[in-house]
Each structure stands twice: as structure tokens, then as C-alpha cells.
Image: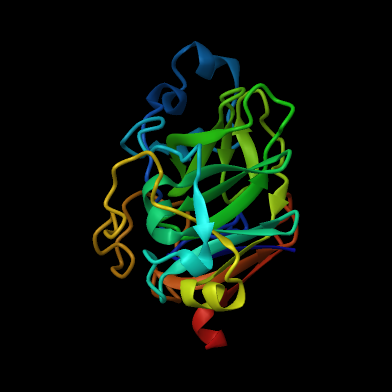
Length: 266
């Protein structure tokens, strides 16, 4: 079973069979959306092209972190105790990525020994997923494509330029279209919990190579208001659109999924 943590919006996307909320930062790639241009005419989208939208800043306009630096949780002082982190265990090592950094970058290309993996986070859907990367490719890294599908992040791999839907966990355009991502289990918790339970865990630092105000949230009141910035296919009004939930899906190619409100565990 896989798990991603997300805010609930008014959407329940049947194709993704997961939790969809609102928007991720992104943008650009207009020729691929409209179908014009040589590259766009070479491949077909595996999702409805009409639902692939330009988010604004353009390809790599939201920069990925490609040389992440870490310090132990015990030594970390710039993450507030009640702030959230997303953590993954790779070959016995725990690495954690604070929300307030992921909000600005969305993609972290990371390694553990000979293994490469990507941590992705869509800040306005609140969804966090980690995938194995193809270490045999010419470039195992991923970036932010600038495109959105039902307001959710679309990544691209730098080896082939193929586009990958975060919540669908598969390539939806390009040479690798139809391939499923090999997921890694992620957990989300407050920093104080991580620090207490795993003081030796490695925590991503603000030494990202980019100048960003990591104390500020880049989308104003979006986490609490009822607005959606980008169109979605389906809406569900049973919960406030930004209610935090856990989504569980049995496999990438199935619609068998369930959603649990985090408040129910409190």
C-alpha cells in the first residue's frame, strides 16, 4: 500500500484515485499543452490534454534542489517544532525535508549510496511522494515541468524530458509514457516528533543554492481559504477544500483508494 499526505480540496479525481486539493506551483510548456511544436506532435498525452494547464513560472521556473545538504535533526535549529517535515527511509537512513523548503522548490533530487531518488511535494495539494530514479539513465534527475494536471504537479525527467504526473505516479507524456514510478514510502510528521524519535535523522538545510524566504509561505492564505487557483475535473463539497487527509492507494494502476481525515487520529 502506498501513502501520500495531502490537503483535501473539492476534487476527487477518479483517474488519480487519490486525494486532490488545489494547485501546485508551476508553469510554462505552452506548446505541449496546445499540441503545437515538433516535440508535442511526436508524443501523445496519456491524460486529457485539455486538462493539462500552464501554471505560470515556466519549466524550471520553480527550481529543484539538485545538491541537497543535510544536518542531523538534533542539530537543526531553523525548523519550528510544530512545522511539518516529509521523511523517507532509504537503505536504513532517515532523511527529512521541511515543508517550508519544499514549498519553494517542490522537487529534491537525492542519493543514498548508489541509489538515486526524487522527493516531490506539491505545496498547494499538500501531496508528498518519493520515487526511485533510474540510475542507469544519462541523468537520473527530475525537475518541475511548469505544467499541472487537475492542479497537481507534473514533473519531468531530465534524461528524456518525459512528463510525470505526481499523484498518478507515472509518466503521462514522452518517451517513457505509461511507465509507473517505483515509489518509496514516505511519512509526514511534525519536526518535534521527528527530532524526539530520530535525533540522528538527516534534515534538509536551507543551504539550497537559492535565495528564498523560507520563513514565508509563497501562496498567501491558500492553505486555509476555499479558493482554487486552477481548474479541476471534479469537485466534492463534503469537506472544507483544505482539510488535511491521508490518502492510501493499493497500486498505481488501480482506482482502489481511501481517504482519512488527519483530525480523526487526534
